[in-house]
Image (cartoon, rainbow, N blue to C red):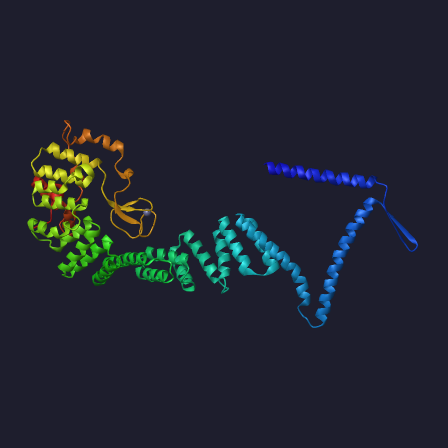
Length: 512
Ligand SMILES: [Zn+2]
């Protein structure tokens, strides 16, 4: 604002100065008298100024003429390009000026201006590899996708600009959502420049999106070869891709391939829980119970997880509850103080109908981290010990409004996934899921939980009114998971519940 005002003021001052100067010249009496031979010319001051300007212009023209004369002489001497050089030098200078203006316009975000300057530069310079690039970027900046693609395609013809053109068209296709064409282009760009990090990442993402896990692993290897990936990250990601490959093979019905891939995935990423689970299941399917036990034991020591316990139960699906409790000791002594271990032990004891032991196993979890599963286990213990229905319902009510406990949470966007996936369903981040407590805002809304005591009663208050909202929500125990995956339906577990109330909720253990 102030700058514009200043500019106007300066302009007015210059005009005033010129007018004043011209007035002075007109009024002044002096002049220049030139005497030459017989003629004598007298120039008034104003005329003097005009003559000076004309002389300057004539001198400039003279220099140009001299240069032209030399060019003609050189041409006559046999230098064929001398004349064209004389004329193109001028064009070139203007062309580079237009190119500079175009680049500056591009940098300042003026797409239309940049495209105009690029067109002018192209006319003067004839360097399409430079001007097409500016035009393409300018068109993309304006949001004119077809035009941008058109310019990028022109860059494909020249070997020097092929990669830039490919990358440009690929990005346009990605923006359009045409992932199939984008994948083809990314593959081509990758063969041209395997070390280009951005291309590697795009190719990897597109391959993962389209279940091309073998291709994605090759891309990852190339990425590591070009030093863009630390070793440990490479092995973990390679493990994840291999696990995805295994899951894909399983879905396609190739169980032998899936087993081999699962073991490979576990070898590459030993800390990855779903890989350990799948590898253990592969060993169980092949009849290697000991190997399966070892895989789960090791994985439990680093990260106790309900899915590991479920797979561990599958090793001996028909054992008695007492035998199961004894066998699981190999697992539970790995990380005895971990909440997951405590809950598992409590669930196993409930299944074996040793309720005091279940209570002891749970320890201080009810006070320290009362999540849905812990409180549901408490309800099962109370029921098993023959407490009143109202007390049991009280625990279940508390469970409803309690935090859900650890989940597969995306570290990038906090989206919660019911099962582990390699690519976040919300933000499409790769390898962003971790098993932990979700942020607090994902628990039920306050208005919802405020009504609960009225509906179902409180765990220890006097108001223990009737109503059974809790049972359906009972967190499925790990061992119960093993049961369902093994073929027994959830309904049968529910039927057991109805028949024998002592074995309610998490206590519904596998057959045998
Ligand atoms: Zn996410």
